[in-house]
Amino acid sequence: MTATGFQPPIQEHPFAGYVRILGKGKSGSRSLTRSEARQAFGMILRGETEPLQVGAFLMLLRVKEETGEELAGFVDACRSEMAPPPPGLQADLDWSSYAGKKHQHPWFILSLLLLADAGYRVLLHGSDGHTPERLYTEQALRELELPVAASWAEAGTQLDTCNFSYLPLRQLCRPLHDLIQLRPLLGLRSPVNTLTRMLNPLCAPCSVQSIFHPAYATLHQAADQLLGQPRAMVFKGDSGEVEIKPQADTRVHLLIDGQRQELTLARSLHERIQPVARPAVEPLRTLWRGAGADVYGIRAVEGTTALALTLLRPEMDLPEAIAQARSLWRDRDPARLC
Image: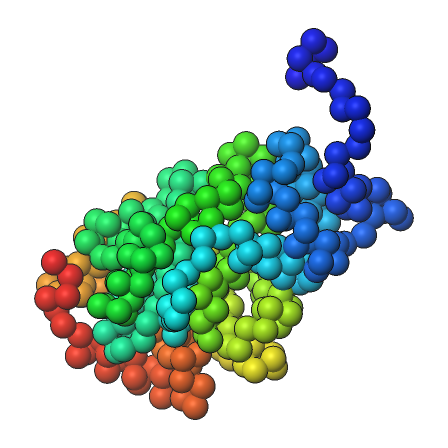
């Protein structure tokens, strides 16, 4: 910004008040109400703000740490501004995928196939490209020739024909996609990386989310409660994706009809697991077809599938879900992946 290039505003910008709420210092600042958060984020999505304001707003939230009310308000705004789905389009399970895989192959994709083949309608949404050296879900699905939608209409067709569809965030809400791409510019993740996981654009009764840091679990639950999410699951997954780590106990945070619960999926591998040199999809094909054995991959698929089943089938306890997941894996169609 140069002295000759900057034009001082004549009057205060309408968005300035929201920046002021967050930035008045330790004694003067406060969190946004849900209504304020919805109004502020709606302005951002509609392009009614200046880039400087957006950066200040997101980073002030990052330093303060967002609240459940703020996240719920942001999701309210996103749902109002996103491309509306066709009337009557439904999914059983909403699955967010925004992190990309870094340390292991994207085994969770095989869990998605097991659930879809078992008759559950799964809508997957996510974005890519905001963090280098990761394998993002859209690229992995395309390499596996699995459904990626270019519109709500196509997503609906895919859900009807194969119980599974991935809808990229850029198709769902382009301004939100652009915001999540700011990480290389800002140097940090912003609240956008959190709120996108809660979008649940079809208001599916079940929602599964992954977090990078365990402390975020209660934040996700608070927002889901305010949003009226019937059943939700949050846990720390591999690389931030919805995929259990077989070599670690997985602490799972559940929201069932407004009540918070917890369960623990015990580790199924006890040896130290080394990260792969580069995440790829060919090991998924090999494992699914039965052409090779990867104990880590099988345990990751079965564990992730089992957790999803406990959400979809609340009458099913964890041992039953694990047994069902193993049955689905054993009875899978090896020709499903070409």
